[in-house]
Amino acid sequence: MDTAAAAKIVAVRPALEALIVKATSDPESLAEADPVDAELIDVVRVLSRSTAAQHSVLNTDAPDSAQ
Image (cartoon, rainbow, N blue to C red):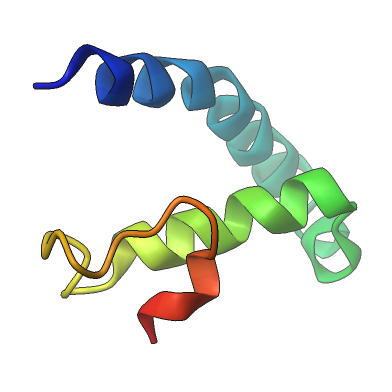
């Protein structure tokens, strides 16, 4: 694995863990997520797509381009 990609995965982990804790303690808070949480949710959506493993789909600058 590319070290830059691995570093990005490790860097997002604390934010993802915090979002999971927030979502489980107050699920309604995600209905009006702050911009940082909303962006993280969008990243998770893109990575959760069945086509996310295709290299041409992943674009770090525009997470919505993989529709």
